[in-house]
Image (tube, rainbow, N blue to C red; front, side, top):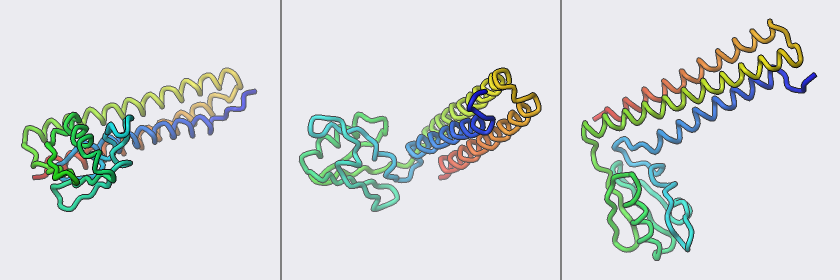
Length: 189
C-alpha cells in the first residue's frame, strides 16, 4: 500500500492552484495602470558591481506623487546603471536624473494603450486558468493511479475528484475576480 492518500493529492493540487493565483498577482502588479507603484520597478535587474542585482537591493524606491516614482541609489555611482536598466526594460517610461535621484514620471495611459494592457491582463489570466486546470488534470490522474495501486475504491476516488473540481472552480473564480478588478483599474480614466 502506498503512503499517499487522497487528502495528500487534494492538498498538493490546492498548493499548485494557489501558487498559480499568486503568480498572477505578481504579474498583475507589474502591469502599470497609470498610477505609480514601486512594484513596477523593484525587481528590475540592474548591472551593479559586476553582477545583475534587483533594483530594490541597491536603491530606495518611493512614490512622492501618484504619477511619480523616485529611485535613490544607495551608491550614487550606480545612477547610470539604474538609468540604463530602466531604458532597456519594457516599462516604456523615460527616466530623468539629477545625478543623485532617478525620477520616473508615469504618463497617463492612452485609450489604445489601456486596451493593449487589458489584452495583456487577459492573457495572464488565461495562463493562470490553464495552470489551474493542469493541476486538476494531474491530481485526477494521480487519483486514478492511487485507485489502481492501493485500491482506495471508486467512491473515495469520486469524492476526491469532486473536491478537486470544487477547488478548481474556487481558484478560477479568484482569477476571474482579480482580472475584472485589474481591467476596471486599467479602463478607469
